[in-house]
Length: 131
Image (cartoon, rainbow, N blue to C red; front, side, top):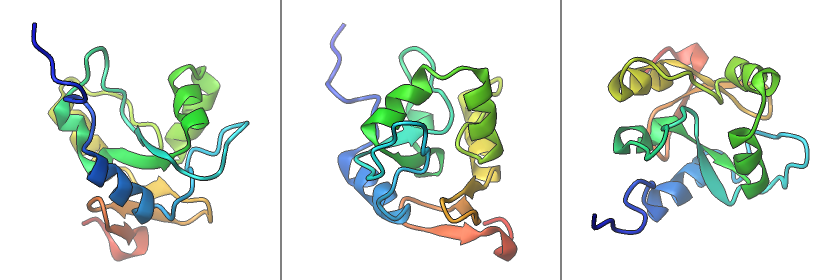
């Protein structure tokens, strides 16, 4: 099987835009957080092998490398807290339905304000309604 490197990962320019959209800070803020975002995290687990559908910027948030790894190994209590903040979205029956869940779920930022993710560069405060 011929696989190109990075085919299941978001493009680097999209990741950079998401990090900028999220203020350059890790939104996960788990214990041991580095603070500065250096990568992105999928709000919905792509499962083994991943899915390009979930590489949509509305499924991504800024994260540091440490929190990104810690979330992958997190227990149910941590995932529950992340879910309450919109940073973990449970899988639906299809990746397309999971994407719709991500779009409909606002993200709580570090200042406590909630925003819908509109694109890699834009977010909308929940007081403005859904995009």
